[in-house]
Each structure stands twice: as structure tokens, then as C-alpha cells.
Length: 349
Image: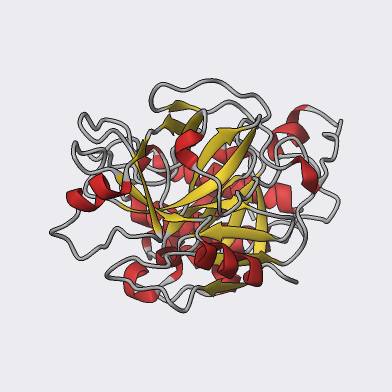
């Protein structure tokens, strides 16, 4: 098949708004591509279409469906796509006890680009329905928000086989894709109040830990994020409320956020259905606004730096607008005993 005929077929498939067809053409046109080759093809086509297709939704559906057709990575992958391209030297492996150690930590004063491997537990969750952030807690499990996987919120049914986890680099286009075998949503999740907004995804295979793939530390129930040196939110989400590119900012963004007193946060949301209670944690500039989890992704982590490690305190849940003064971001509190209990039970293999 000539290149131009193949390209024409991709155009036809794409404008039929069936991104799976395009992905199947990629899979069938290559002679058993490796996971890395397939991911490069998908990303290359995404970049090509992005130059003249302005619908972020169509682009997301295409990339998500295309990546889902790629073969899973081999178990001994220890490098990201970037290192495969530039080097044949594998990164040293990391033990699970090295949780929460940043690859290249910088102090943050606002929403900025994260360094390569700086936050190696932050992942992107890609599905045909929605794209969310997630957090590596061990070799097989990713924690995210329940609303990212709930049909009443996403508008379509999310199946585990449709989900791709992208991990291993701060540049989204350089990440490695992993498959999901199943996920568990906290059965107590309430879509109106946003109570128990937590879910756990189980991967089909263990992650190979490295400088760029590492679990975050989970705090004790008695730990207080307000006593941390600093707290950050991070993700590949939009960078402002006005941003039209709501997905696929290629470089991981991070922002420093102060912890907000729970009673002050409750007062901010007193007239809304979403409740602020003991299962929640609030962070953001209560008076000035300007920095919020717009720099991150729904379902991504609120992480706080204590004792030379990052600890996983919150899951991005909801807010009013984006970085609006008077309305801090609200997070599911990971170290509440009922939340941490659900995560512990869901990660026991």
C-alpha cells in the first residue's frame, strides 16, 4: 500500500468520526509493530491531525482508541519512549521502599512546567470517555477519582479494556502505555456530594520501577498536610479556565497550593450540593485565586513534601470554575481512615 493511499484511508476513517477504524488501519498496516512503534505512530498521527482539526474531543477519541489497539509493552521495559530514541542504556531499577522521592525537585511558586522525572508517580488515564490524572501507589495499582470512571459523570460506560495508563515521562508524547485489567470504584461514591470520590485501577502487569516510574508515599492517618513544607498539584490538564485545549498539554504542569482550613472551605461551598466534610481536603489561594488544579487533572494527586519525600494526601475532585478567588479546590482526603481503608483493600492482590 502506498503512503498516499494509506493517508487517504486515514482521512476517510477520521472524518467518519470513528477513531477505532483509524487505529485498526495502523495496526493492520504494520508488520506486528512493537508497543513503542505503535505508540509513536499514534502520537505522530495525533500531531498531524492537530494541525488542522480543532475539535479536542475528536482528537482525544482518536488517540485513546489508537493507543488501545497497540500491543502491551514487554515486561522488561525500563525506559520511556524518549530513552528508547536517544539511548540504549536502561535506567536503574528502583525498589518500592523508595516511594515519594523526586527525580529532580524544584521549588514552585505558581503553575509551571515540571522537570523530567520530577514527579514519577503522576500518570495520565486515557479512555474514549474521559481523560484523567492518576497516581502510582505500588507496582500494580493506580488511584484516581471515582467520577472519572462513572457513566453518569463521563456520559458513557468506561470498560477496563478501554483504558490506557501513560507513565514514565513528564512529556506525554514520550510516555509508555500500560493496560488495565480491572478497576474498583468506592461503592459509597455519591455523584452529587462527591463523597468517597476515589477509585483504584489494577494493571495487567507490574510496572518496572525506575527514576521515572515510582510510587508515591501514602501518609499515616495522623499526618497533617498543613505541616508539610509545600503541597503541589500536577497533571496534563488545561492551564486556565479559558483554555480550549482541555487535554494533551504535552508537558506535565505543576503548581504549589496552600492547604485551606476546612471550616473556611465549607463556608465557600455552603450554597452548593457538593459537600465539604471530613472526607475532603481543600487547597488553593482562598482570597486571590490564580493557581488551582487547572494546572492538573481531575483524579490527579495533591502531594505534600515532608521528610524529604512526597506524600499522597488528596485526589482532585471538584471546584468552582478554575482558580476562582474564594473557591479553593476540593480533594478526596487520602489519609482519612475510610478512604485509606478502601485503597488498602482494593490494592491487595
